[in-house]
Amino acid sequence: MKKLVGFITSSLPENNFTVDLALQMKDAGVDILELGIPFSDPVADGPVIEKASLEALKNGFKLTDLFEVSSKIAPHMDTLWMGYMNPFYKYGVENFLQKGKEYGIKGAIIPDLPYEEAIKYKDIFKKYNQSIIDFIAPTTPKDRIEMLVKNSSEFIYLVAYAGITGSGAKEDLTTIIKDIREVTTTPLYIGFGVDANTAYEKSRGVDGVIVGSVFVKHLIDDSLSYNEKIKNITTIAKEIKEKINS
Image (cartoon, rainbow, N blue to C red; front, side, top):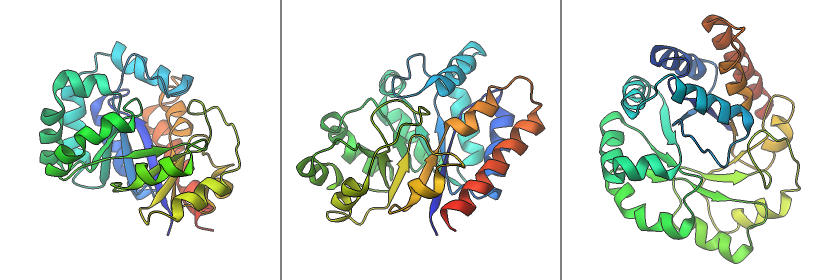
């Protein structure tokens, strides 16, 4: 069964809503949660997730909010923290990992941390039973793929196209998937531009999909009630899960 990884922005609109949404996403078929850490300059994210981050910050988001919702979600579903390096650095990477171990967090996705820097943190992540998720892009050469996946764990994040999340670009990934498969058995999940319309096609040849913008656009829709936000997001999650396993 192919996996569905779902991204939502932490604490938007508020903590209890995030917990309720995450647990209902689990019931709708989301296998792994990416809990987004709001940040003022999310360079890899498109306008939808960027807007969500800025709204959460405007609402007063603090790392204590992330820790509160994580403590209530991670015991019930596999949870990763997705954020940029600045908050990890300012709080202290080891302090973050100690919190993560306390709550049962599986690891972190840090898109602005290049492999050459990430490798320095691999051992300390391992010490706290967590992983740094490795990224591979369609433009990654074969010799670099071997280096990137050498110590990979949890899963490998295959970026579907060069650009930002939610832009909907398309690239032929057949060769890059083949190259990855030849050098690792770590599960391979694809992200960027995955929605109900593209999920089946993008899931071919990989072990799962990562979905973010299509969920988050409902979080930032002020015309929706809390219940409507949850209903819309969980309906989409069910549809995507069915399509990738059809």
